[in-house]
Image 1 (cartoon, rainbow, N blue to C red):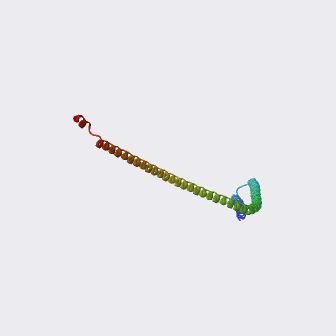
Image 2: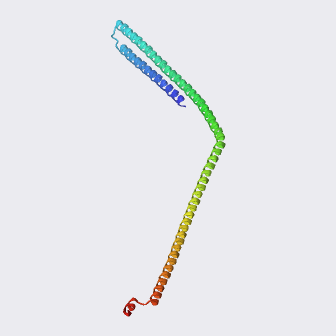
Length: 233
């Protein structure tokens, strides 16, 4: 659409230039004719002019007409040159537009081909990713299951180790309690034995003391006192 607009604008510009040149040429010719008519009228009014004057005037008019014809020819040539230049400009613009069209069409074709190739490449990449995911998914699931089982096994082992440590601590505490109870029992038995030994030794010493006292009393009662014996003598 924009190319047709450019062509139309160029054609209109060429037509305007040709119209202006033609109007200028017509105006110049009309001015030249009016001037010649004025000269002829002046020559006709002048009755006292001689034949030589009329011949000179005719020659001058012929020269003017020749110059006018030459000017008209030059103007026509200039108009033709301008028209040719305008036509060349229009042709060049048309050729440029045609090349631009071809270039854009080629670009569109190349771009379309590239887009098609890009679409096909993306489709292939997508299909390859899907296939890779389909192949990797079971393996990943198995790997995840193995990892999960390994984590569960480690957790179970930790729980068993903790339970074993707790049982061992409980056994050690129970053993310590039993040892303390045994020590306390031994201490109580030892103290009981000491008490018994102390009680038996106390009773035996009391018996010996009482027997010795009894013997002394018996001896005192059977033998007279020494003082009494001395006084009697």
